[in-house]
Structure formats: C-alpha cells, structure tokens
Amino acid sequence: MPCELILGGARSGKSRHAEQRAAASGLPVRVIVTAEALDEEMSARIARHQADRPVGWGVVEAPRGLAVALAAEAAEGRCVVVDCLTLWLANLLDGAEALPPGGGGELLPALARERAALLALIPQLPGEVIFVANEVGFGLVPETALGRLFRDEAGRLNQAVAALCERVTLVAAGLPLVLKAGR
Picture 1 (cartoon, one colour):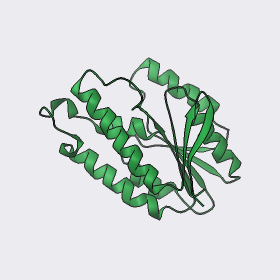
Picture 2: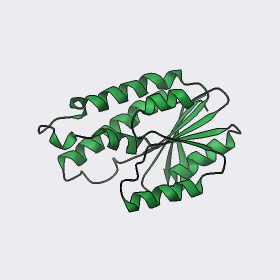
Picture 3: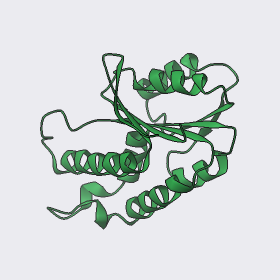
Picture 4: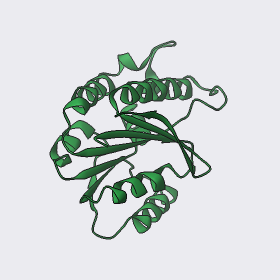
C-alpha cells in the first residue's frame, strides 16, 4: 500500500477507515493534519479527531505547505496519513473571492504552486501514504462562484491524486468500496 486515496462525504467514515488502514499496516504512523481551528466549532471537530486517534501517533500540522511536510514525514517503514486534502485546498483558496468572473484556480499562484509540488512529490514518496479527501461533486451545484470554484478544484485535485495512487477507496455510510486496487 505505498499510496492510497480515501474519498467520502462529510461524516462518511473516511478518516476512521484511513486510521484503520494505517493501524493495519503495522508501521509507526504519522498524521499530517490540514485543518485550522479558526472558530469554536472547528476546534471541537479537531478535538474529536484527536481523541479518536490511537495514542502514540505523531501529528504534524500543515494547513499549507503540504508537500514540504509530506517530504519530511514520509519514510521507508512508516505510514503517513494526510487528513485532509479538501481542507488543505480550502486553505489555499485565499483571495479566490476576488477572482474575475469565470476565473479559475490557475489564477491563484499559491494554489497552483502547492498543487504542482504535491503532485510531483507523490510518485517519489517512500513508505506508505494514505490521503483522505472529501468527494464534494455528488451534491447540488454551489450557489456562489467561490463555491463552484472550490467544488471544481476539489474534483480536479481528487482526480489527479487518484491517478497517482495505487489504491483508491470510496467510503459511504462507513462502508469502503475499493475503486482502484493497484498491484
């Protein structure tokens, strides 16, 4: 399981499935978290995730600069869980509300730079890496331009990461469905 992408909707069980996969690897585990506690509700969500994680797993915060953090943490004989790509993407959309009508993510230099760095790094990663991401494309078309940009960029990112991973799993209602099973 060198590289896996686990997708799912909100509260689908994707993080729990990633934790189960990491624990089953038998390797020491590091978790790279991308959420920022910007309000009380998000702080509570983060605390719930922390409480659910096994004791002894190292945690690294990387709301941006994910490729740098991943390069530092990935190693032979180690499993790294990245939770989650979708929050990382949201963090990189700073300034997107000021884009001209019809402007896409390519007009955001930090997003383009960080995305390119991550995608270039994935094929070179040592050890086992599990990415967690939200599948946001099943819902309604967002009402705002920023919402549509986020949905579109999340879909593009998920497709690009899935193409680079050996295994891709969709989790719905806590049930994993393997979409791609490498080797």
